Image (tube, rainbow, N blue to C red):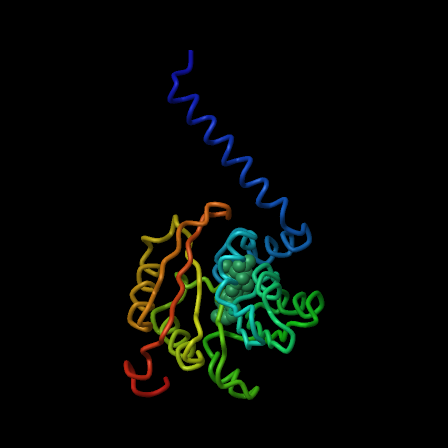
Length: 231
Ligand SMILES: C[S@@+](CC[C@H](N)C(=O)[O-])C[C@H]1O[C@@H](n2cnc3c(N)ncnc32)[C@H](O)[C@@H]1O
């Protein structure tokens, strides 16, 4: 006879299995297959097993102003899951720029989302890339980058550029997977966020994602005072 504890465990497993299946059902099959293909070929660039689920995308997009036109930058757009949530909040006259390092993702985004300004480039050069396009200030920066895989200098460079680009009332947001929070790259990211911003708010866990995640929302960059100069 199985004990009550075993029955509870089996039920929990069953429920979480059902939940992950449902998460994938809400994604477009072609996006999921493209994502899996690129993630298998370049696991250290993609840093995820699946596109972000709707709940996480919506949470990330919340920093995008929905009451006025704005300029929004997205880092690491992948197959566009977060791009769609951002787009839903954008007002007419807005600009939505996505930086994506992988060529296949970038090409696909350009084809499927003509409103999106897709730049196939490394977010490490964020500042100069936007400067070349005449963008000096933005209203929100939404990141899907795999921060914990980045070396210290790369994390700092991107955060520094983010700080320089944000308008005074703008915000930056990114996510981290719960199971990886104790890895050194994830701990370094948290330290860097707190060093780089006056306010860092950690969200509740988003369980409805594979794997579950949380988000950071950061405001009022300290970089200008912190470094004195752009790096
Ligand atoms: C975890 S996936 C997130 C994809 C998508 N935003 C989502 O949430 O479903 C990370 C994405 O960042 C891209 N990426 C990784 N390093 C990058 C870099 N240095 N510059 C720009 N994009 C990068 C990857 O190609 C991938 O599309």
